[in-house]
Length: 604
Image (cartoon, rainbow, N blue to C red; front, top):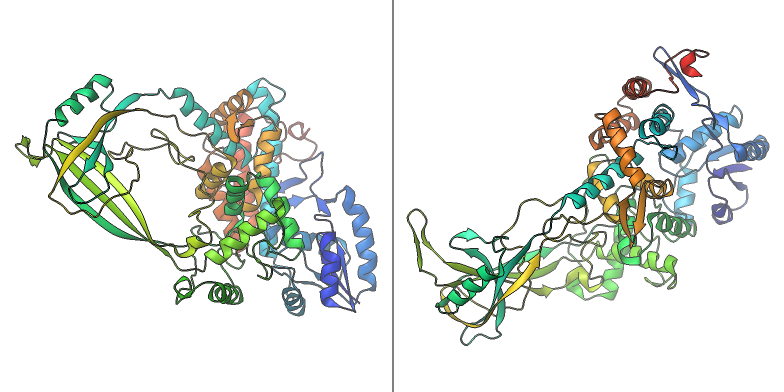
């Protein structure tokens, strides 16, 4: 008998049916051992890191059962998940099940072909991946044990009980946005809006004042009377089209989902929390419906691309199938390219194969995104028209002829929908745009743009230097808005862009900062609580330059990637990073110092 060990019991019967007689599939139920619950579980001895791993509560029973089965097996194959966490679980199993040779097999999808191929081509446990995982675990433990006990003392509240290398950065970003919102002062301003007619070229269209006397208008008109004076003057002047441009824009298809973008899209489109979307994705994976859902790679196998292209060729007319397959590139330099993007394992049954409940809706989202990623780009015509009021009335010594008032109109025409015939959402994970004064829902906005208030309208075909006439002219009142609060989707997007944490951790981070009372969710917006703001203020003051900084955490992720590739030794890195944290923790009232010898007062 060959024993195959996986993590989840939900996979066992399906995988066993793929392998047939001679194989037995059992589950470890995730990690079987971990650091002790009431102790840091590590010490530093010179250049060595001493780690005290212990069987967890469930692991003691599970290991006994697995060890008994392993004794009867001719071979043991560790088929835990294919990420670093799964590699570490495989290593822990090999450490506690008895001395023998263990083989490692990974598959990206629970299908007969993928499972059989993996079992027939096993490898050794990758200790570089194991070391990367345990380095992350140990560093996070150090932050927790060395820093968390200083929080209650520093904040003066018992419920300020924890800090974390990624958790605290996430809270800090929400707190900083809260400060921006509190500091924001709204500004009311006015924008003249004209309805323009070009003889012989219907329809009439709206244009917005963007320049006045050669300068961007922006928010300069802060009094209604100023706008009314401009309107009264412009009504008596000649009008002329001074610029008309049309550009063609190629709208490329979105790439297939990775963990973070799936969480963002599910939040925006389906109103699912990241934790809920990952739970449903886990079920779809264990059902054999989708590939592994914890990935930061956009790669697709040649077989997957061929499957998508065959479907497009069979269900859409020729222009929708590009001559060459798309090969999206990862934006993140540290993406694990050996993995694959999230996609359906097969296309039979279509996008509605799993019903209309949230699980089925999530599957349809993945299905549509996968097919769309291999469809032809869309093509749009984007027109911009500038109409001048009193076009030559204002002379400037250095700038020549300057139009006294320039009104701008913008319009978009879809020439070919391309992949948008399947889904009209160009970037499903985008959490929405903030108004003037704020950013795109993730970072503060920058400088003002002169045409930020111009709306998209239907435009006739125009050229420059055409006469125009005014049909109607009025003033529209506008008010600047504070930066938008983060949603779970937009905060995940920002964490990913800043290189803070890994996609597999985001769902738990979102849940943790809410459960511990540092952030509240109201109408799907993240609000920093008084506790979260007080804790962040203390951490920035006591630990500034260290784990509370996004750039520090980003550098740690890069180092962990180097460890995973075998380019950096894990123990020197961990000792160095730990010294940075502990040095600051000592100043803040350190409770537990892993650099002190056992039995000393600093270890009590």
